[in-house]
Length: 300
Image (cartoon, rainbow, N blue to C red; front, side, top):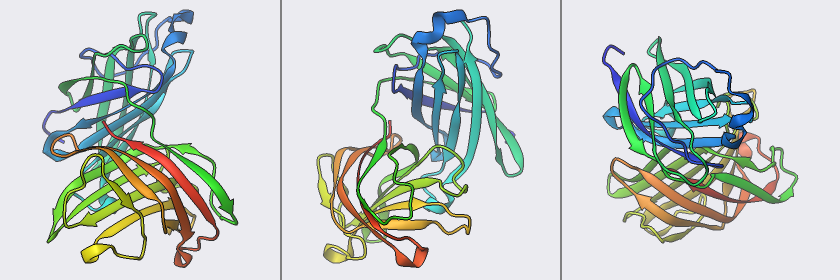
C-alpha cells in the first residue's frame, strides 16, 4: 500500500480489558520482572477499517510478559471464501510493570508485506480505556469494553470423524442484514485460532436469508437443506479442514439460533447463541457421524 492506513481497534479481554495510547511500530521486551503477572490473559477485539474492511486482533499475554497472537483483516462485502484479506502473526511483550506493551507483525497483500503494530497500557481487570493499532503508519483510536469469549461446545458425539474437543472462536467475518436481491442475508464465520488451510482447522458458519432483517431478540430454527418460508435459509455449518483441501462439514438439522444483539452499519456487530444444534454429516464431503453443538458468538 502507498497510502498511510490506520484502523481503530476495539479490544476486549477474557481476563481484563486492554488500555492503550498511541504507539509506534516494533515490540521490544524490557526488564519487566514479576510485576506483569496480573496482566496475563487473552485480549481480542474488532475494528472498522477504511473501505469497509474489518480488523480482528487476538493475542495472549503470558505471565512472563511475552505476547503472541494474530490480526486478521477481512472484507465483509466479499463472499465468505474470499473475505479474509490477510492474517498477521503479532508478537511482542509487556515492557514495564505498569502494563505498557508493544506488539508488531505483518501480513501479505498483493505481493507486499503490510506491517501492523500496537502499543499501549494493559490496565487492571474491569477498567476501560483505548488501544491504538497502526497499519502502514496511520492511526485511529477507539474506547474499549469487556466482552465474553466466543466458543463452541460439543455433546452427544456418535461416530464423528471430527475433532469434537470444545474450542474458542476467532471471528473471521460478519455480514449482518445485507440486501441480496429480494432477500436480506446475515452471515457470520468463526474460526479456530491458527492457519485456516491446515488440516484439522475448525470453523463454524451461520447463514440466515429471509424477507426481513434479523432483529435483536429474535429466535430462528435451524434447518439445513430445508428452506423456510418463501425460500429463506436458516443454515449453521461446522467444518474441519483436511489434507485434500476440501473440508469435512456437518450442518444443523434442528436447534435454535438466538440473537442477543444485531447492529448494522459501520459496527457490523453480532451477539448470538447456538442452542442444541443437531449436526448431521454432509456425506459428499467425507464427513461421518453426528453430534450436538452449542456455542456463543460475539463481535464488538
